[in-house]
Image 1 (cartoon, one colour):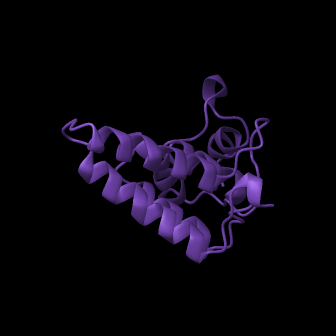
Image 2 (image 1 turned 90 degrees about the horizontal axis):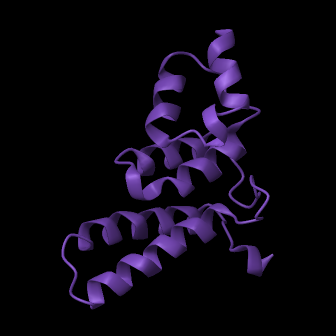
Length: 126
């Protein structure tokens, strides 16, 4: 694997997690993500609101064995914590009559179901 790709997976630029579109691109370019898949799953969940690729990337990471119950950040939030937070925000905004959030809620809700089916729990449940 290319050293540049390896470095990016180990230390994302500017301290920011690797976003789902970039994860997809790295994998398509031959990156081996076996050791980083758990952290990448958390990153993908944290970036759900800004990624059209999030569902596919999260499904792929779960398929290759990413653990949905590992905290990849110092705040100890798990992937499901991130996703359910976004669900809560979108639900609130939709109930307030804000437009444009129903499709986002639908997508994030599907990711929540996907994580739950893979055995994901909230940090408070562990």
